[in-house]
Length: 294
Image 1 (cartoon, rainbow, N blue to C red):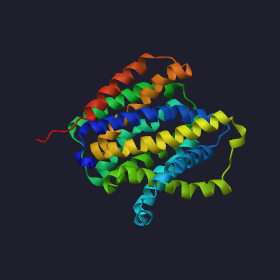
Image 2: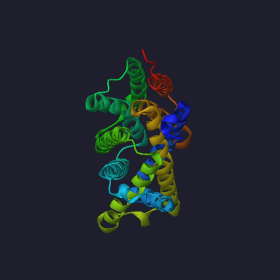
Image 3: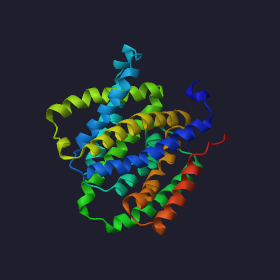
């Protein structure tokens, strides 16, 4: 069954899976960022684990795949560059900032790129939904901005750069239309081939300064969750819903990350967080609805 012949609900189910895994990714990544691990370590654990697990499934990849410059471009953007930026950012900025500046910015960046780059003007319903998402994200962000200081600015800047990188990756994925399973395998393997030798030879490491539990959790969650499962689900969602509607649903992540931080990190459940949850949920639903032809 091709992507276009699958029922639309598979795209929404895939997007929901991405939202849940990326919510955990925000929390796990910040846990690693607060440890002695460098951002380079976490990316190496992520790509190394994913490459080992996916290697047995790559025998049927044709040689032409490895010569395709578009695939190497996607691996460089979505695998290496995004990973370096995001894991380094978590050394300087908290998880809540990551939720807002990474997935929280996707609905707006993807829509802007599609409009400005490809000339795809968003329908009015999507703009209304994005407005509600913006209100919700601001409700979550405002208390953090008021309490913040300049120490998080380097991390925030890196997160914005990572978010823009992922938005470009999302648009190119839709434009080049590779099979989700082919792209998932290639991004993991191609990124590992490029990054791991550089990491082993030249980049700083802190692997010996943390517990085995930290290494195992980071390797397994980062390697299996975001890199394999969420990557495949994300690509499936984009193929079914398009990058704009998928990006709107991804806007749920910052609010869910804030809710998850209540029991896991002992953070308070505030009125602004609840208002943000309602606004983002309503906006994501409205922006991600199919647009009926006139």
